[in-house]
Image 1 (cartoon, rainbow, N blue to C red):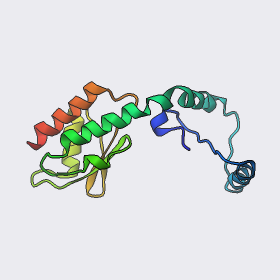
Image 2: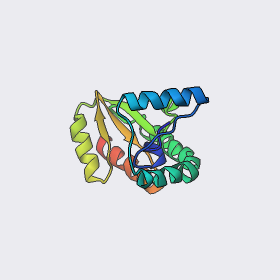
Image 3: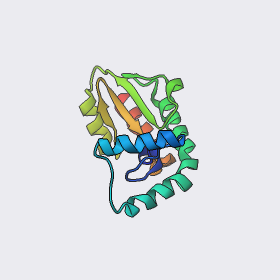
Image 4: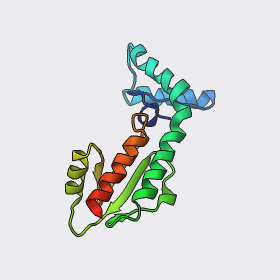
Length: 146
């Protein structure tokens, strides 16, 4: 599994399994050119990710669910909050007055960052997104779309 993204490490992954599987994984990694030297600088945040960040992932998931619930009924948004189980929210967007790039620009003005997807918008909650940030995002959407 990956140590970056929600666990906040800059890079890294962990391969788990029986001894034969690990040996096979190492062989494949070498065949594909994987491998690094002097990885202590990356190992330290990986240890923090595993020992401290893992237990707080449910907070990010809960914030994503709350954001989804609060914006799902706004005009132009196609989103089923019941399908939001992780810290990533992807929803369809089709509004008569705004394009996706226009919405992203307006949100950026309100200090809310998101990414465009094909026909939609993507939000990600993480350790640096708190409840105040969540409310700012909701208010920015409400101001723009209602």
